Image (tube, rainbow, N blue to C red; front, side):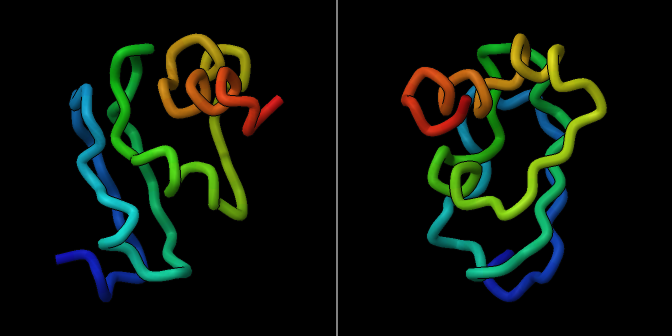
Length: 79
């Protein structure tokens, strides 16, 4: 259960979120490392969009293959 976790790490090839926003504490560190295709996403958009800090090793590549970023841009939640 992640509801009391300060740190949550995912490494999957899931095409649907593996973490529900409702499961997480208000403030947690979340690292996702498995979603490397536009069809894959490990987080619900609500979790992604309430992040205080987003870090990636390659911004341009993330805009191509990170579904959370792609969907947030299309929803007008991110530039």
